[in-house]
Image (cartoon, rainbow, N blue to C red; front, top):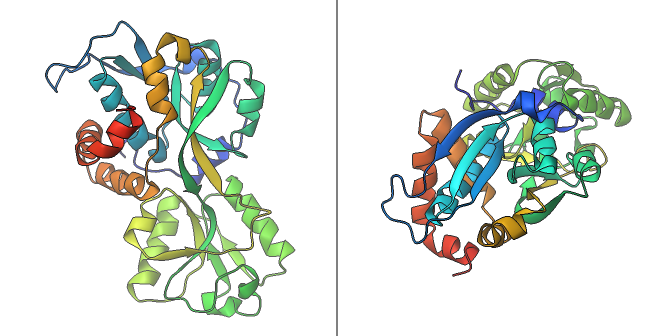
Length: 302
């Protein structure tokens, strides 16, 4: 299995947990690149090194590698350091890390932000559509909300396909079945097992109800609809860029670039697909930079 192949809802369980693990033990330095190594001369060589935290969620990889490419073009040395969410936030608070490109706010990472509010800050929104919830294919008519499922559970053979036991979305889905008084059985499986059922049903245009979240390749591969009416259970998140507060003084040009950062969630999903199909993260990020020169210039304040 490739390192970044799956988001997995065990990852989303990590998103909801407070993991105060030691950053010194968790960090695994994976990259250290010299600015302009593959791109020729850069505009200016800088003394500062920018350290980006990297979780193993597929959603983290495209924004992180794009930011790395741009920062290197600006003349910075960039290091990527792998850790789980708790260690990334601890590293940011200590100044061992400078930037995290995949903070899920306001709810999922709220505890981290409150715990380290004196030393870290959110400076931009990467994208706003960090959805998760119950999903149906677009060809399923008249099912637009969770309430619409009442009395029509047999359309889906009285099943909702989900991910593993113990995952946050699994527990929440069982709560919803009870709260909405739905005649549904939750079919727990792995992410890959769930997606196998999704592919089997959609290939023959059969109705299927299952768990979904964005960004994820499923929204590239299929036309899907996230059901409304579950806001008390699954809150849509914004994905933010979070930095150590000293970055503004340490590297003001980098800080300004990250303040202006944004990316389309569909671009993230398409890049995830390319990486899962064997594409090189750096090459895919460089291609995005070259295809979005105007946006990059705007983010750099040019």
